[in-house]
Length: 351
Image 1: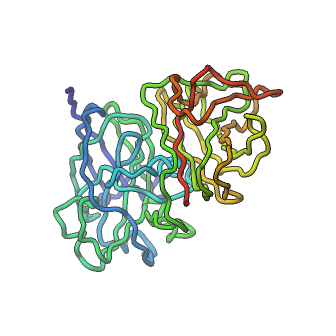
Image 2: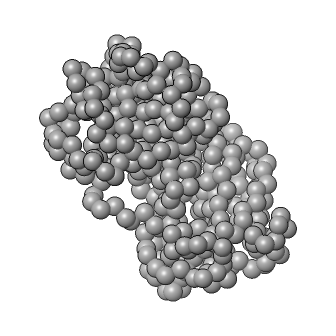
Image 3: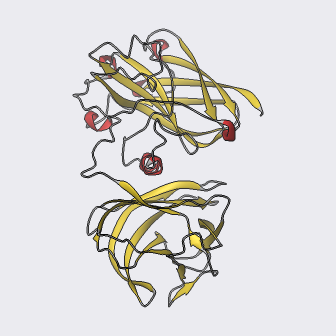
């Protein structure tokens, strides 16, 4: 097991102060980066409370640092981490999970902390403002993710950055909170689902193969729910070795063993450049209740229809999902992929 010491300097900047941080807001973060396969964490608290936010940065009782990303698990090793990360990358949500978290910081003077983070790409680093009416978080010696006794505390994103953590890195985080038009939206609150969401299908594939978008417009996977469901979101693994591109997922009926008519369309997600497969999720909010006993297809497409060999969806041969099939569409007909190939996907739904 290889370890190396990463010195990571993090500054919270007032937006009016250009690139010169206020001396009262300087934070030095020393991070011990280790092999991601050896990473393990034990967090026991989530950001679920709702409250009235302070009007400015100075109104928070204390602060903290929260780091998330692929391979950084949340408190309960929840299934919806992919959805949370996908929405954070696209900037469509502040819903977060406690990943690697610091102890509470006062926001004044010099604060030095040490965090253990797996090396990797696209780490989301949040500077978190905390309101703590009960006084149980800001005075605690535990990290803001480990503290179970946080009644009366709420968490807000003051600023964030997304960066790769492999070598010594310096990152600036700007105070975006004071100028935000709706500060309440910056709460790290994920407790907004209208119904309990469970994993309907979990076609977990590891060390699989893939199918790319070279000369095809769509890639699709079939599934057949036993009961009627309300589709919430679908998680997949994508890799893009070129420039960022937007993608969407469509839900199709089945006609003679291929996608037929489009039933519903997901939100769009920005698939960023990455040398490895990353988790993305696509949320369905309309026309997303489907019947049991019928076959449906989930199909992924790019914002531009041209083929793209740099973009791929992970899957595997060996028929890992026996009740489904994978196909591609090149502009005229749906074509089966290699015999026994299925894509990686997780379907989350309310039954």
